Image (tube, rainbow, N blue to C red; front, top):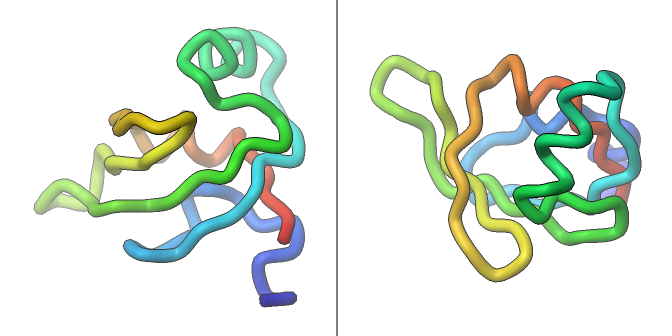
Length: 78
């Protein structure tokens, strides 16, 4: 799925997956990596809250809730 090349996690729709490539915010990346969002990990968008923020994702075998601002700092590749 070439369309996911270098997309932000916040751009994905429910059911779409990608692989974490890098982060755009150093401070946020430390927090995200502590929660299991490591480069090379597969990540899947599960659903969005009714108003679109936050979003539920699955990474490292568990579900995590992220705000779109946090998700926009995660760059994915396929």
